[in-house]
Amino acid sequence: MLSPQQAQPAEPHPAVDVQELIYRYVSLWNEHDPALRRQRIEKLWVPDGAHFWRLGEERGYAALEARVIRSYDKWIAAGKYVFQAAADAVRQHNGVRFSWLMVPTDGGAPEGRGSEVLLLAPDGRIQADYQFPA
Image (tube, rainbow, N blue to C red; front, side):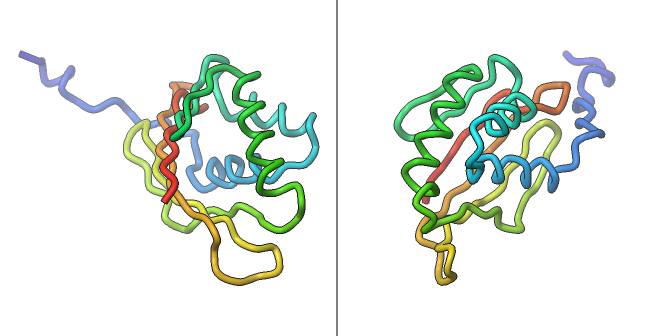
């Protein structure tokens, strides 16, 4: 049996601004500068952080960087699309859920969408990132 103190949920990360976190996360996937991309990865994820997606999983900064580069090269580099966060981010303790859109740079309806569930480490960086494309 848990004591009342043990049964209390963990205090959420008070220093984490969810909207700012989501902005930084989505901006990473649009970043064209390789050095800035790597810096952003290190500021967003813990060193052994993971990204889980329908085709696999990536762990650690080098694998995360390779994943972001593949996505950037496929969707963003040609200048036809940009990723945007939807205005639906919610946080529950160390979990954050939000949706994203891939929209044409010249306007129009989204051509891709999905959602993410982020599990944050005690320092507020991403420990695990689960992607669900729609």
